[in-house]
Image (tube, rainbow, N blue to C red; front, side, top):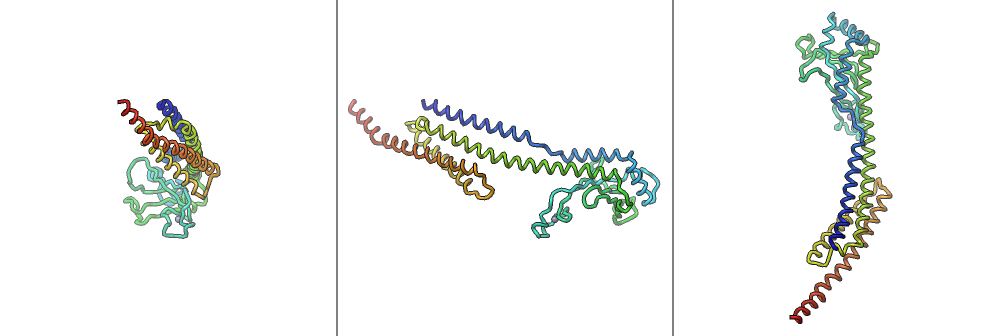
Length: 307
Ligand SMILES: [Zn+2]
């Protein structure tokens, strides 16, 4: 009899846990994925390698050759490393009015990030760097530290000085920025969904706990039983009930950003726990009294008489 009721309750609890796990798996599998940074780098590298055949690149190359006073196309094609930059999140330095928090990559309150795009691993210095995107978009750098360059300090050539837009550079900038913007949107959407889901899950969990205790209310005496383990089971139940009660009270004490349904559910849970607790307490005390006084006494008396 005891086992039957215990297994009914535990089956119910198990099904709740399974349901919740399945719900969680389903939710997380449906979240949008951001485009991986390595994937973006690969895409840009491919695009950059295709540029060699584009007219806008040829215009840029001709202008650079003229400026650097060189004639060989390969000198430009093979010696440029692309530095791809993109605008990212806002920097908190502005709102905090504390410039010591100012990040190195912050430009007027907005942070940017950079990737060196390279065909091979390593940190070998290229003769030239070309910055695409970010605060220094369209800067061509003749690296001062490179042995084959005569200059000791870096020399910067602003492509804007050529008074024309180079489609090759603009396209790469747009490609990178668009992907990172979309990634940012995805992250924001996911964060909002997670927040809503967690709230839903919390409320759902409380509803289920109330269901469990409502079920338990009609079966507790069968589950606690009338034997030597009863006291232990009763104490375990009592401890769990107190924990749940504390948790519900804590949730109720959070004032900001409060959800009305969650509040009602917490109150209902506390109330249910109280009712079940009072029932069990009364029942258990009576049983305990009876076991310790009349029941034991009567039995022993009866046995003594019988012997
Ligand atoms: Zn800043």
